[in-house]
Image 1 (cartoon, helix red, strand yellow):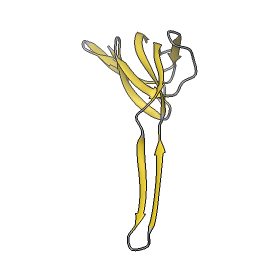
Image 2 (cartoon, rainbow, N blue to C red):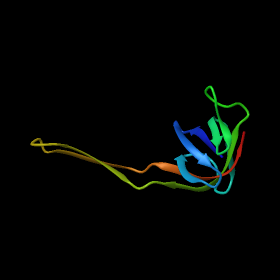
Image 3 (cartoon, one colour):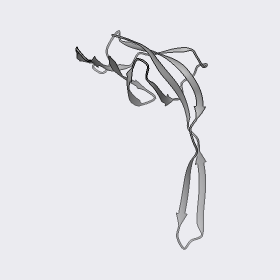
Length: 104
């Protein structure tokens, strides 16, 4: 069984046991969080169910594994023949979660 959830302005396909990174969520490590914005639920042997836009009563329970920052992304702006150079770095915060349960 899988569910398509929405968090942080992005959509993720989640199955029980999946581990993935989402935009930063507030909470301590090893606490449970609930995603209630479920867009679709499906799986083998069952008929897929789609929400308009969300499925009422459906929720996905996950556990926070890690709060961290991603690798640095360098932004380099350059204009030729003008001696203009600008360099910036950015590290995005993220939360790593593992899916525990999907309730339809």
